[in-house]
Image (cartoon, rainbow, N blue to C red; front, side, top):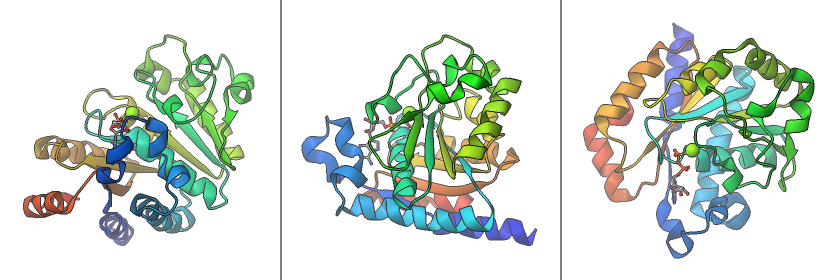
Length: 252
Ligand SMILES: Nc1ncnc2c1ncn2[C@@H]1O[C@H](COP(=O)(O)OP(=O)(O)O)[C@@H](O)[C@H]1O
Ligand SMILES: [Mg+2]
């Protein structure tokens, strides 16, 4: 119980923001949004490094290695945040793997060059795992893309092969970040979180509906994997006030 309370305290500390106004001028270029690379001195970079610092503590204390990034709905910023967070860990000297676990709408390849025909869905058996992992241009950062084989993601994530894949990956990487589809749309994120040590949930300011946020939190409360962080994406001061008024980050 005491341990549970401690985890909750950590969650509140990780209430952080990532502001879109930083990108107004060049909003069409997705690669530009890898702020750690393109804008090392920006507020957003500072924010990612500070998220990593808070997570570092949990990573060390609670032996967290595999983290799933999820949200209520699409366009919350899961993929963008997963990518920046992965670079933050890699910069901190951790051998990091980012997995595109959104097999229905793979999008990590917008940020990292990789062979789209290979990846998670293309792993025939465990011996082919390493052929589907690519080095990125970022030191210490590797990617396992979604792959191009048409399979049923929910069944695939439940398969014994998936368990084997995660067991094997744990032996080779310090940190594994898994980008997933939205929690309210499909069960994939819940299933994948069974292989993870912690869940990071992303809300998009002004877009995530309170009703959906609450529903998501209820689902996550049932999960055996703890929520280790929440990220309020794309805020400005006005919207911060809005959310404080609605008290919704406190529902953790
Ligand atoms: N804080 C932000 N500032 C600017 N653009 C953002 C921000 N968060 C997300 N986006 C953009 O919004 C779109 C959806 O984000 P994405 O990460 O793909 O969401 P999800 O993975 O949750 O569907 C992308 O074009 C992304 O670059
Ligand atoms: Mg996505």
